[in-house]
Length: 376
Image (tube, rainbow, N blue to C red; front, side, top):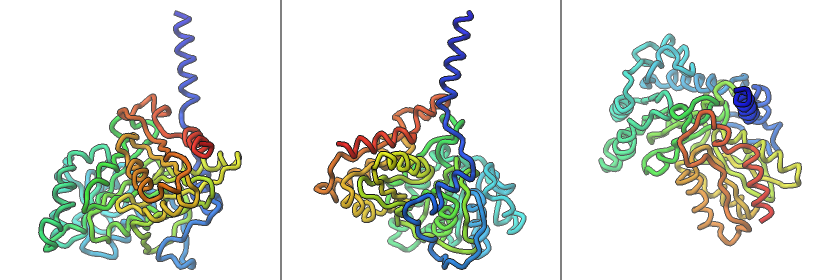
């Protein structure tokens, strides 16, 4: 009995050591700020360098963007489960009180109904901002998104559309979400012509990309990294600005290997690049920001320079969006490649609970892939 108890304690200590290290807001802000990167990231589009800045975390930046969207367009509406009292992540806090419960309102727990309603509202000319409470629960609405929203303009010969529809949904690992609160289903939607798919990495990008998504004339699925809602903190321009959709951002310039990711994974990639830099490896780090359409030219130009490519995302590796990037770069830059394209991704299993540290593409896994690619 004592031996069994001792074994359980050793196992518990072992698993505890493997838990992801908690990140302070200051450290996250440092990782996402220009000061932590070799190449200064470009300022948000519409920001002239003179506007006032305010320190925000990611959910506050999303809330700020929604305030601006409702304030600048009286024909815009926000709806979803629990949004009228702020939502489970507080992203819609204060909106119903300011703009009225006829513009910010709760819906039944019915994802296909939420999106179906949004399609009709957008088809009548309104800006419909729908919230799916967790990306894991977007699948009941899959038919509405894929067969209705995405095809509306095409099947009508451009006579009508629902381009005013934006679907916000939190995605990704959070440390304790398990099977149904941790998934990254972005690749399902990148296979659908007629949609745009956007994933921000930081507060300033969340605000600019969300406003651009809401105002774009195509239905957009906007994935928010819920693990960064409170942890990612940085200076965000006050006021109205947009970040261009379909354009990647080079966060740091390098000469040995191109490293590509999006969303919350960018923090992991930044650390991995820092780690291999100590070994003399120069990484060019790129945040796609938009997955559909994605910025092929920026990635291909980088790979033509470095000759190597490492792609990383939380979703399972098989048929993940990294496979599309690898295939396209093989077409565009095959003669420039000096090593096989490497992918560091989630495992081909359901998202685990206690084994989450084994599942995730961690800093050490990415660093190992970079070193292997460079030494090929």
